[in-house]
Length: 85
Image 1 (cartoon, rainbow, N blue to C red):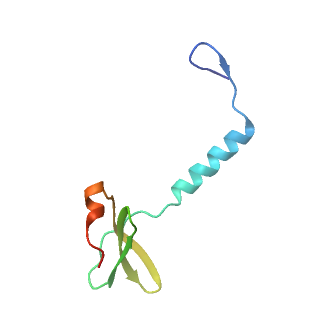
Image 2: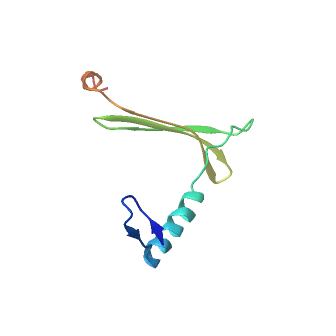
């Protein structure tokens, strides 16, 4: 049992603990950005919407893809005025 702010007793539920452990496992399994390897092909995948511009630089190694660099930017009102190509 923990003592929370205001000296109110706080109890953790078994379901909460189980879900917390699940979230920790999922976060540990997330892909980490990699360093580029010489002579490996790279690809740039852009994603563009009316309010956001994003891209991912991917390194191909066989049939696997590894993220190298990720960008994401939300357009401010002035940026939304750019002409669509």
